[in-house]
Amino acid sequence: MLEHSGALYWTQLRHRLLGERTLYMLATEQGLARITWPEETMDALLRWRDRHAPGAGLIADAGRLAFYAEQLTAYLQGERQRFTLPLDLRGTPFQLAVWEELQRIPHGEARSYSQVAVSLGRPRAVRAVGTANGANPVPIVVPCHRVMGKNNELTGFRGGLSMKAALLRLEGVESFAVKGHARYQDC
Image (cartoon, rainbow, N blue to C red; front, side, top):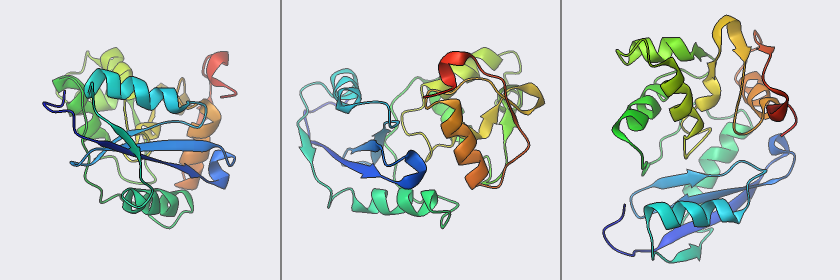
């Protein structure tokens, strides 16, 4: 939690890969802190603020977030493979470890939840890895879409399986099967 009620800055981004739907981005003075999925509204940023920075002002500032938006747009256009953005991630120590590990998965590759758990030295924490993956506050930049179920199955994804498949295809990953629950199919 922030120790002061400093400002939080936000902007929105639209791109054809997102179906021209709105994605919101929020940053603190320290770095990018939250990205929404297109089906999420501005309320997601307000909830993040209320939980992690109560009392902070929320200021629309496309100029301040232009650096973040440019890198994200370049990625969505297939022109960028790595992000060089400062991040301000807020989570439990385990979540932070998972999100750090996700950033080690190279562009164009995928890992299973169990592989991520093993790489963390916690081979039995597969479900906890899935939960932390789903709680990722800055999807795409911290590439939670690069994690699949066993046998290369797309099993669930907060942004919807069609979005996960689109991001994987953008990176050249084609060997996966969509097996997830129906609630994730058409997000």
